[in-house]
View 1 (tube, rainbow, N blue to C red):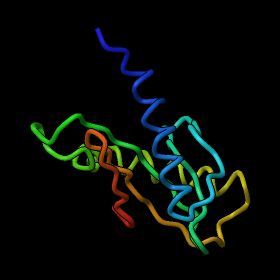
View 2: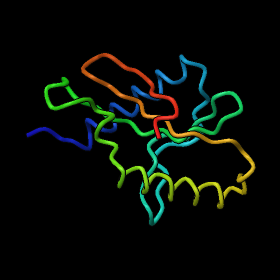
View 3: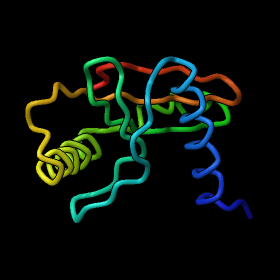
View 4: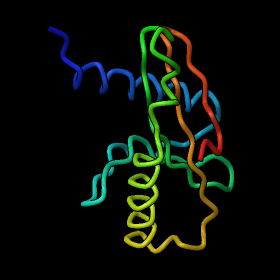
Length: 113
């Protein structure tokens, strides 16, 4: 039986390393609130980026980013609002990215929702 939590943590680490190579500055990981969790919070230029990491071994069941459905997006939005409120950062431009990992391939979908 595969340990999904361990795999998730490994893929989040992979995503962080990749984002660093793309010029992002990782600020925080696994930010929790009563509304949900944000995998990675980073800076990309002027933007504060809330990134969701999704992994699949293949595309047999669709692309990983497709798993970020409307309900998940709403949870991330609420959690991001809470983060901005707690940090007093409402004046920062923000965006929502999805880091999609398929096997060994990684791509960042900027402004995913």
